[in-house]
View 1 (cartoon, rainbow, N blue to C red):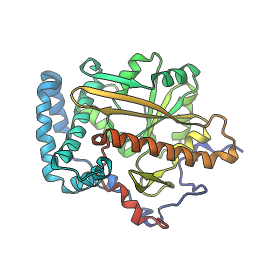
View 2: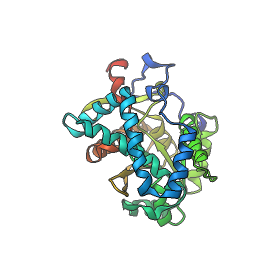
View 3: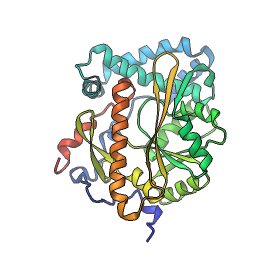
Length: 328
């Protein structure tokens, strides 16, 4: 019996999962505390950046980062807690400022990347052969990312891989932020975004995959009320959503980890690593394979949080779920 693809991302617990019943009906913290910023500031920054260039306008980033550092004590508290785990030591003030500065830099670089000014950046790619093999197969795959570094830098990879098409599946909240940012910098083209939560979302995802496209999804945040799976991340118990991986399993597609980490100056490093291939997974093994895939995803996220600690932009209490989840 085939599952209804329009219901794949609805809250349907699977064996071995625990639902966060104590936070049901309440949005996750990352939704309740919106990121700072404004349209007029984005327009001004885009205007200056495109006319004065990246080197001159990077100086402004230090002022923006300093403002965030001084007037966002909640975000800085959570940044300090995360860095303590990722660095394996007590973070210094400079460590926390660098975390904020990397975040500001990746947002700033979006201006150039969405305007296809790729020549401004030195970009290395790891796992390019994996992407080429999947592209040659023509069946499409899921790209499972995180709020780690820059997704936009992946477009530079698309320039090297002829025929590579990427659609993004994201919650309406994030889709609105992306579109607002593009409107603010005056970029007319819009990325192919599939808003999750709409009744036809999974049908549209299946259609993109059938055409040979890749579908990108971020797997490191929950809305606060969907099914989750318990993992270990940076030595602490954490909870990751099961919906994206379950979708890949039901649609019988490979899942590839993706990240575009910022490494200072104008350097980015794009990585692709295999997570799972559900193409031939029997139905009776699907639930166990989904859990194993989520744990491998958590392991890869853990690795890059440790190797590139200033790239994970979660300025909220990610580990709060430990005390809010029954049975934790």
